[in-house]
Image 1 (cartoon, rainbow, N blue to C red):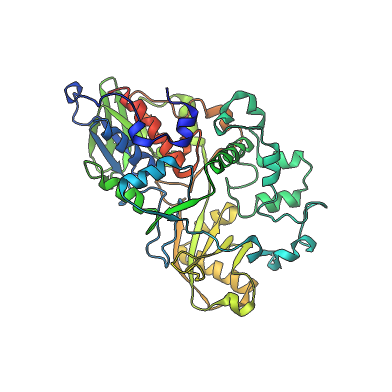
Image 2 (cartoon, one colour):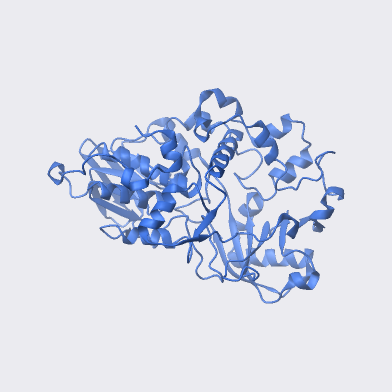
Length: 478
């Protein structure tokens, strides 16, 4: 048995993965023991653990690169992260994998710089300094809470109401009453509609709107965050960019990752698994581990078909929209107007952050417009050039000093990536209660992993948690 603490802390990683002798080659009847579909962190970690136990593993990946939603933007100054950013002190599997793969961890490169006071709020195209927010006529918050900032307003309310003592207890049926929307929670507290609209429908962090993210999932995330703090407040990144980690992990596998292998169907029976790719390739193995996000898994046919409730979960699980536009500043506009470099807006710039990803902590290397919710969805439907032009026009209107000072260098849409469909999973109201007990259940000789299936951790560590679980399940069939 592997207990909750093991999965939360990562134990001693691969050395303590499973006790006992490795598999004996004489017991194998197929050339491949496990085919791992997806070369993100969960798939690569599962492959590593399986190989350490003597299993013959093949890893296939639909993209032309490894890493999944770990994606360092090497073509943007400072090489910011397009996906997973920080590695917490409690990310034991990630930290162990970095050591094993021979990559160096450094203090985290901040997605935003400075303090909250170094951000300007822009609502209805009017700029408000943080020091003036409490008295601003655009502040809809009730008396006694007008000093709260829009991006923090709800979180202390969630924390006070959170009944979860451990992150893994969110699937306990006794907490099903909290599997409601964030909107329902704030409305039941008596918050006014303008407040809810501002804190939940502007620059969304989870889901797409106030109605499609579960309060119970939020409680789970916050409980996990609290547990992470027990390991320390240090945060790390991989030197040279976080994508160097999956690249190094892939290089240490016995066989190279097969790139460009897009899966269209998976057949499983008592003898094993056959994976069919869109280019006509067929891969036979005794078992398979599928790490695809459900948005990508929706286009994969199963034979036999998935059980009804599991198929429904694959079809319905939510994902968070995140449109990114990256810019470089040819002129220091923040020095020209004397305002903070960072902006939090209700317009198409979303959260407009100054990134300091270079060696000099005083140098802004690039700017990122990180846009969620309805604004992000709308920008997604536009051509990249039109989307960046709209962001620049908006900024020039609300902040004239940016006109001619910013230049677009890259856009990134996780929704348009057919193998992602969103930046991370976002459980909708009712989905924890309905799907949590069956969402990751094995299907014949097929096992499932990925950050969307993590029950204890979130983010990168959550992805590896599920890779470890799926590897354990697959070994049980060999």
